[in-house]
Image (cartoon, rainbow, N blue to C red):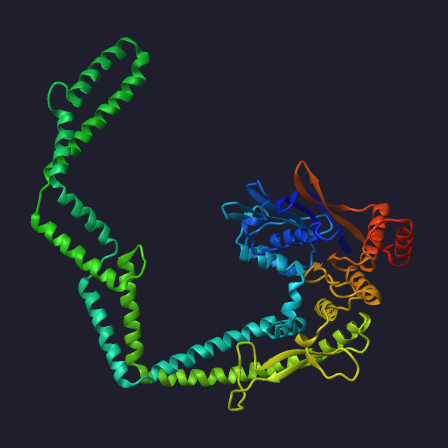
Length: 580
């Protein structure tokens, strides 16, 4: 449940802090007041894509944060947090509390935190999808796409894991079929490929590449190329330590003798003397190392030529076999390993082909069984879903609606049964809105109000997969957000929609942006969104309404003003339909 939400510098919002409660919450306000901004900020926090233009003009960044309470039996959320080592706070009632924060800067960069642990946008989307379901007007469009029908049915039937397992098998079978097809290439092509691969392996093998040798050779080449400069620098450094009265060691020796004598007179100089003594011996060691390094230096023109030739060979192989890699030697050797593996596969092609054929046959039997299992479960669930949605639609002012979930077996062009990545059937939602009319695709429904009610019915059905909406379902998504679910409806239908949202609000937290007083009047909590202008700037604000403020807002929604007649009408609606 969304308990608190803070919004900073988001669009027209300067700074807003909001507290929410369980139940049915409505957001109302004049057209253009900024209701969509509130929903947009929540969508941003749920992982939606964000552009820098959402940042309030004149500000460096926009941020949205929320305190979310999670029911103790929401095992999916708890497991998600535990697998990512994200700790959560446990409350006295055994519920959990999690804080989520997201921001975006004008540079386009942003950060996301769950409990002060940085996460990716994909992680945020996954996590928030376990807790929130945001339904905006664009969801009507998704409802019209047939690929979404399969997802709705599978979610209702609890088949997501089963479908994922089927898809894994389907992908494995597809890959093996591709491998079989490739293995059946002509013998001439196979021989040509083997000849090329053997040349690659032979060329790389003869090069006898060692990891890290390019860098070592480049260092050695630079040393040999600049040998005269190097020996000059070493001579200068070595002579500064040992040559002449003013050499480092002579001066250090005189200083050491002086400090020895001085510390004999004043014992407080003993520590300084010991430190200088260490410095003196360190200087002697350095001078010795310079001498040894100098004695070991020699210039070998032949070695320089060998190094350059070796580097030339390695760079040639890198250019030939490596694409964008900082570790060229490793990449070249990896290319050789891949070539060897392909040689082995091609060499034993016939034997592998028989094994591959057996594996394909086994997978085909497995996928047929899994497809049959999916079809049986989908068939049973489709009947239940169709009946449930038709019943809900009757409560929502469509008494003659007939909703059907239709499964159609996939077929090839030749009429044979086939499989897709999600099963062996296509799934379509069909509806007849009126008695005597044939079932039609949802896309052929002209009324936006009918689409709104179908979507609300599907949402309700998905919530009802374990318990009736009359019960107390504590599982799964805990907060639903409906952005203008009332599009295209009014009158008695609006009353029915409001009644249904109230029912869901008994065990889920509901947020609904609405323009209809008959829906807003049923809310447990009423928030008003307003836009104001101060100092030449425009601000969007939102806050909870008092009882009197609510009366005036309902009156405004009814009549456009808060006159006595509108107030009387508002009071009548509140008394009749308002939450207790």
